[in-house]
Amino acid sequence: MSTKKINITYWVFTGLLLAFMGPGAILDLLSTSEALAVFKHLGYPAYLSPFMGAVKLLGVIAILIPGYPRVKEWVYAGFVFDLTGAIFSGLAVGDSLLQVSPILIGYILIAGSYIYHHKRLNIRPVRLSVV
Image: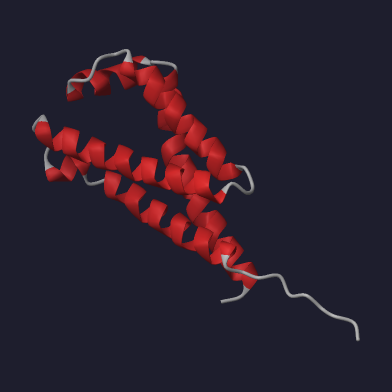
């Protein structure tokens, strides 16, 4: 796969991932009524909402900042933990599989972004030597 295709695919997955995670992060950070209703439904205290929002928003920002591959690894892991917790919490309070299934889209986006992030890291610049 060419460098251009790898970069385009990375940004498609990553853009969709950030569009998936970002709005929820902002709603949580601002402790909107919608976010607090979800936290209440899942049995979480309201004070957790701004913390989770801040952490997710920092993750979105970290993915966008060039470099820092180790930080990005932690962000991808954190996003997986967040989505896994959301699915588990939903099921634990009685939500159906159908109700939590949209979260699976997030896993696909994380996987695509993560895989192509690593493909981008493995691209070695071509060095031309003059003899």
